[in-house]
Amino acid sequence: MKRFFDILGWIGVALVVVAFGMRFGPLGRFVTTAGPSPDKVGTWMALAGLVCVLVYTASQWREIRVSFQRRQTRYGALAGASVIVVLLILIAVNYLAARRSKRWDLTQNQVNSLSEQTEKVLAGLDAPAKFILFDQNVNFDRYRERLSQYGYASDRVSVEYVDGDRDPARTKQYEVQSYPTLVVEYKGKTEKVTSIDERDITSAVIRAVTGQQRKMYFVQGHGEKDPAGSDGAGYAGLAGLLKGDNIVVEPLVLTQHKDVPEDATVLAIVGPTADFLDPEIEAVKRYLERGGRLLLMLDPPIGERDQPVPKLTALAKEWGVEIGDDVVLDLSGRSTSATFAVAAPPYPSHPVTEGFRVSTVFPLSRSITPASQPPAGKTVQKLVETAPAAWAETDVKQLRAGVQPELNEQGGDKKGPVGIAATVTTAAPEAAEANGEKKEAQQAPKPPQTRIAVVGDSDFGSNAYAGTVGNADFFMNTVNWLTAQENLIAIRPREAGDSRLTITPQQMNGVWWFSVLLMPALIVAAGIYGWSRRRRA
Image (tube, rainbow, N blue to C red; front, side, top):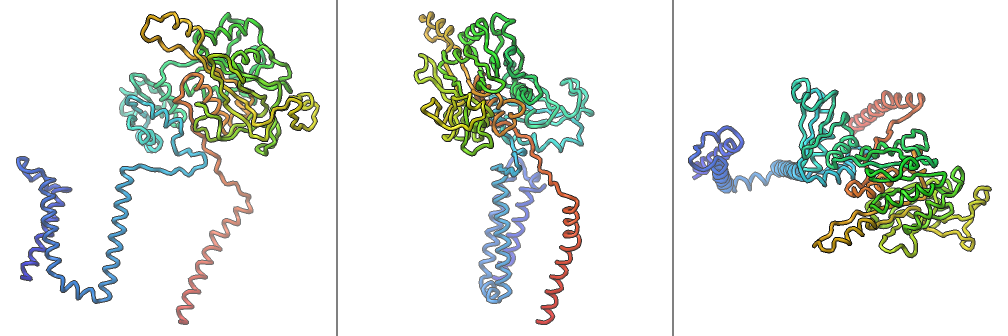
């Protein structure tokens, strides 16, 4: 009987080996296609082999019991079981990792992860998007990590690598002029970038998705901020970000035009130091009545902006926004200067600040308050407000004189939290009237919506302050809300932080002595000490 069980054990091992070869090796090709598939045959053979091995193992129970009475066998079994448990854990971890991709980015600005905006853009894809990278074959590994993140974020994104030198036909087809060049194809539209930075790639995807460019006019001629200015007061930095969201920036002198151009998606009035003329105000009103979008940023009447702008403030009041003749002071300890108003999460509920988890800094602001009784049909919402410790100081003359400010509610000061930005939403009046005349239609077309954003400071978006915490994101989110591109409202890609370690020559010498001499000496001394103790034991 013992001989029978020994033969049965070897048969079981042979069946398992053959089943493994059929499943993973070349033996499966010898199974005829007329019968069961090689996978099924291999599975049956493996089960039969395991049964034979188990029967053989059960027949040897006396020998197994005797061997386990020896201490060496018990230790060996325990070690073998530990190895098996570790292997099972590793297999389980790899199995889960292959099906549940998860990464942790520990860099300062999360530069190795896709930004919130990129993820929202990719989530909005309703058709396949193809990335084609043109470069030399030896350089592809430099870009795989970044481009693979887009594939992980959306199963609609596919990436193809083309060696431009070996495939000149495709290089000519896409008019590739330099390496690297990334081509983004989406619904028959093609966009190209010559950088593999996330900001440039996402910008190309946005342009391919949105198609037609939007145009944002910055009004000039009243001391406003220059959208092309590269100095501290200019807006060149944000103009570059707007271009990345497929929004073209152009200056506009209203006195040279009867009306705001028809192709204007957004009209921006940013920090004027002089008031508008009556014809200019009327042109802005006509633009709003036909469904225009207005970004109005008015600084407080102090310093270089001492001249009031009553016509612009009256225009805002007509739409339900009260612009205070004051200066917001913040003594909450959030900033080093009282005139720096810092707004921190949570913000008032609004699409612009939904999920916005960073602070914004306004260097010199005035109060912006929704009217207690907004005009009929207009929805006015507070967008940003200060800390409760801040207030709106109405005695601007005392501030000019350098007198220490104090909250004086009896004198007209507004106690915090103080609003410094608000929005207005309403159906365009002209479109609403036109739809009212078409009562015979079953369903009138949805009228265009007039949207206005009013901010009590224009310095926060300048080149000097746009990079402060969340200032640039707040400005871009506001513009994207005005253009009805809510899918782009998010935190944008960050630049890599400067993580260099700067040390003096003396510190460098100390590091050298510690690593080359002191540390090895300590290791040798510890070894000698341990050896001497063992000798004495």
